[in-house]
Image (tube, rainbow, N blue to C red):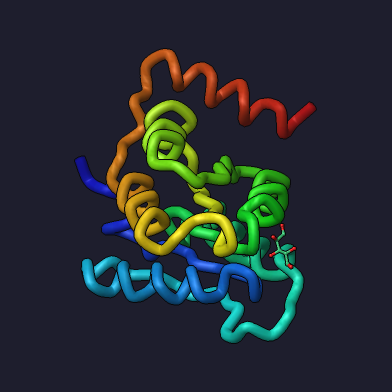
Length: 153
Ligand code: RB5
């Protein structure tokens, strides 16, 4: 199966709370030859996570990027923002099981993590599972379609 991230770069974004984790993810993607676009932030200076989440998610919805990986202090603020953007299905993950199954069952296209929650090793394992696990389809297609229909209520 062709992996989406082979055909379009991964969108990366973080606020100051997730900056260090984003930088670690960048190095991890580079080591595997996976292309990415870095939507910032570019330092540990305090900033507002909605300002970083929106452009990265917009790029996914536009098809310019395959999926988004968004980091803040908890991952929660980023996931709240991402899920408000039509076309995004974001999961806030701090375990590998959720990372695998949000791809298999939810066809998630945004992964959110907390730089103050997960260690680097676990975060990179979560990234690998998220990027390498295909959507199962089948009965989950109907459920994902119902999820997306909630955007038009
Ligand atoms: C910033 O201090 C922090 O609130 C932010 O990174 C994030 O955790 C919000 O959900």
